[in-house]
Length: 474
Figure (tube, rainbow, N blue to C red):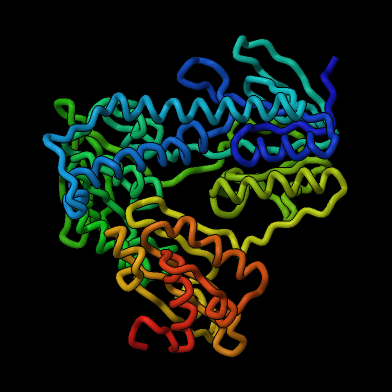
């Protein structure tokens, strides 16, 4: 006999738990299955994001930032400390407490919304059956007319650099190092590589990042990427572009890396190696034969614009489908699908999903880059403004970076906003709202921004689109 529900969600990461809670709010009998085991050996809801991704990485980024400010910047404020030190165990312990708080929070939300939770490994079977192999190896079957696949993603492992959780680690391992490595190697200069590389660099590690691509942050606007690269170099992050790693050999408790760049074959030795070359959809073992659900060439679940798989009543959201692997993208997909299942309208504007990299300075953007618009033949105009001319940024001693606004040359409609600097993870939301309401650069320019605030950089950049910025020479 199968347990019957209106909706079954496979995966309790950002996309899955949002789908489950919203479905339950809409009066649907909902179950959610997940298999993430926390450090305490118990089911830990929240997926990669809450357990070993977004939340713990931000905790370490903040801890390492405080230490870096103490050792490098506080002296400018007249603050001094004798022999400052970092206790890595305490720092990691704080991170773990934050993780437990949030994973426990999801469990409380499930309970409060009457979402039934199952711990174990789920497989979608034909005829709307989900088999769940529990942690005790017992198998039960659940059924529902609507099933949401939210299996998430997992780290890509290189064949020559297998994870051993000691010397060669993935993002989860890099969050749990028990000491600051003297030399940290990172393969991949993407979000994970830059953020975790920054954590350990601030604490004193020599960090070398090897990126196979010739351009730094190719998905970001070139002007923003250029500023970010310059600031990272000042911080001591050694980022080598066009460096293709071919071998990682463990020798005497170190890792010897062999890579090829413009100068030919090179070698470097590190004490720890973080492999951060991207993530892939975690769809292995998710689908039995005969479900009607298709995978693409990258192992992602094929869906339409409404996250429907084409198989009746089967939906998929989050990292296991097309689009950027961003937690907030998964949030909205999960909610939209729950609302569609309940017969309500559900919609996501993929053109206004913000991107954020939580380095120092932060990097954020929404919409099109200048290069994308040029390639598409769309006429545009730009305006920019540096944080060095913003009073609040100067008072904070955080003057690196700028805001860049791109608008249509004829209509003035905002096509993209790109930022690098202090607090831009928060500032980008103003740009998202403006674009959602089809705003123009003129709209941003005429909105009164409080003084002194970092948001004045957005205001001045919008003014700069028409060469009327007040606080810089146009």
